[in-house]
Image (cartoon, rainbow, N blue to C red; front, side):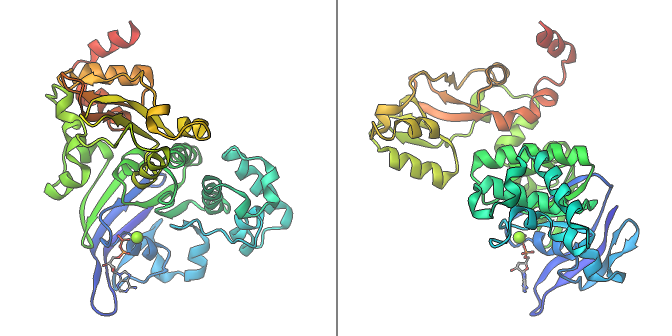
Length: 383
Ligand code: ADP
Ligand code: MG
């Protein structure tokens, strides 16, 4: 479906942004390009719809060399979602969704029907058709940005950090929604991110780049199991790798030892600020001796903002925590079973020493922790 053949891009001034890229993907794959800022992700993506021309090499879509196509025609055959939401403020939602269908000269009625149908896909009613972008929340606007890329039903869609600007909760639900949508519609997606959690969650194939060069390509599982080199290991994060490897014993070995915390004497506005800065929706509360006191989340703050000022007034003290020497296995089971998003880890004196998150566990639970003992898993799940 999509093939890069010795593709290189050197910008004026001599910067080699993409260096001899060779890749091939099948139709229907969710392909995620990831790497540090400046490694050439956006350049690579924009060469696919010829917003940027390669210096050398060729790109093929369905066996056809795109450099031999008319670029305007090519762009109309490819969906594109950019980093900022990119909705036009003076256009209604319907007009925004229908940009490409309009360019393709679909009749008005067909465009409106298509817009309605798309809104339904993301559980938004047709009441939104005649509203303007500013009347929608950030998450809703981004959904519209995604729908716009789906509108003309192009088989290939490019997305450059489409969820980057969203708060973590909205981002999470949009990722889930979009992954389902992609599967059911069978689109080929090329997606750029710098967020490894996002890549692991969405991708069929992850492409890791550095300084314009391909470092590794593989499924999330392959990359977790066999990172090509130190760079990839570091990029994936020590925490995830330990989890993906066998012989894990205790929670302490896999936990993140820098949980995001606040002390109970701080104000609720300070709590909100930390959540914003660190992009989390809840904080662990400790006292000045590092003892775990409980947690506080956005909802609790929202509900109590009028009546309370301090974290101490609002925090939830009924917090389940695990000891750092607990077996990972048991912790995993606890987290998954209770639907918890994370569990704080404490030492023998109940001082907070780390956190284990659900997101970081789910992917690797079956094959790496319980993998060798299929039968055992089976009996535990049934029993
Ligand atoms: P990423 O999307 O991975 O952050 P880019 O593809 O935007 O990376 O950029 C890759 C490299 O090319 C960077 O070093 C960037 O500074 C450089 N670059 C990007 N666009 C241009 C341009 N128009 N002219 C010169 N250099 C550029
Ligand atoms: Mg970029």
